[in-house]
Every structure is written in structure tokens, then in C-alpha cells.
Amino acid sequence: MTAPILVTGGTGTLGRRVVPLLRAAGRDVRVLSRRDRAPEPGMTYVTGDLRADEGVERAVDGVRTILHLAGGPKGDDEAARHLVRAAARADVEHIVHISVIGADAVPLGFLRAKLAAEQAIAGSGVPFTVLRAAQFHEFVLGMVEKLAALPVVPVPGMRVQPVDARDVADRLVALALAEPAGRVPDLAGPREYELKDVVRTYLAARRKRRPLVGIRMPGKAGRAYRAGANLTLDGTRGTRTWEDFLAERTSAGEGVQPREFVRRQGE
Image (cartoon, rainbow, N blue to C red):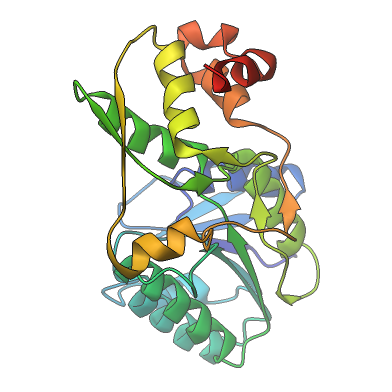
């Protein structure tokens, strides 16, 4: 009988895409969840909390591979330390961890926690694979929606390479079913955009008109973003663009296609 693969964050944006792929590959899945859930065919749930270090030992028992996808605005480093301590005691053979491009270059608290989580995993003695990815399309959409709700839209001067969560899920599952590989090439979306152009495509998809005002991000973080520390030049690229995602998520977005986007950039 094959040992189940433990997925942390299995009910989140990424986990909801990873778990079905693992099941399609014929693997049993165990999900660590903060809420009680009924088992499903090929899936079991263990109730626990990584940050509180509750239920972690039970979750890793009998597991050989862990996909660590759980994350939040704070505490990722603490959660990772609790997970790898339990994983080392349980003789886990492979931890696959999702991190963020720029974790070691952009001086923001949540990115420092991401870097510390990477370091905890790399120093645990458990064989590992770490994939850094760009911001998901869902994250960028949430940011743009908040900006576009204002009568005048403030837009920081920065570039982004948003990536589709499905592309990240495909890559993570392939890594989980392979041998530990350490730090692997970053994964970003197929295109790089100025944030102002991302906002413009969203406004066009929603049939909204808003004046845009460029703003300068202050401090060291602002300098890092202006220098492109959140981007990758030599990583791998996903296949689904921001325009593809927007067309799926907005009823008016079907007309916002790459060719139209290029035309709008010159307006």
C-alpha cells in the first residue's frame, strides 16, 4: 500500500488544484485542516494547526512526502519549523514547499517569514524541494479590485509577472512525484506587465472608467520593487496569461484579449 501524501493548505487557492491532480495520479491524499472534515474517496483529513503546533505529529505519521502549501500574512516561519520538526521525527523522505519570488530580496515582513520558512526546511535534514512562484492571478485581482474601488486609482510604479495557480499546481505535483531537487527554478507567468497596465485591463473588462495616478513606493521595499526584485529573468514560465484569467473571471472580460491589450498600452 502506497503511503499517502500530506498536503498542508489543501483547501486553499493552490491546494484545491493540487489535491485533484494527486488523486488523478493515483495517490492517496491526507490534508491537514483547521476544521473537522468528513473523509472522501482516496482522501482523509487530520484536524490541526501548524502555527499552534497542534495535530502535526498525527498528520505526518506514516507519510513519506509532504506538499507544504499552507501560508498566510504572518507566521509562515513558525509553521514551517513545527512541520519540519515533526517530519524529521517521522522519517519523511521529501518535503515540497511553495515560496515566493523575491523572498530574499524584498524587505517586507511577510517575505522575510517566507525566507525563514525556506531556511527551516533546508536546514531540517529532510530531503526537500523549494519552488518560488510569482503572485497568483487571484492575488493580483484582489489587489486591483481594491485599487479600482477608489474614484482615483493610485498605482505604484512596479512590474509584475502574475502566474496562474493551475500552472503552479501542475509544477508542484510533478515535483512531489519526483526525487527531492533542492531549490528549483522560479515559476512566473508568461508575461511581464507594468502594474498600471494590469489595472487598465481590469477596468476595461469591468467597463469602468477611472483616472490613474502613479505613486512612488517609499523605502527599501519600494526600491526593491522598482529594481524588479519580485521578478525572475531565468525561471520557468506558465502558460496562462493575466488576460486569460481575467476573461474567465469577468463576464465582460471575454473581449480583453492579448491583441487588444497591446493596443491599449499605447493609449
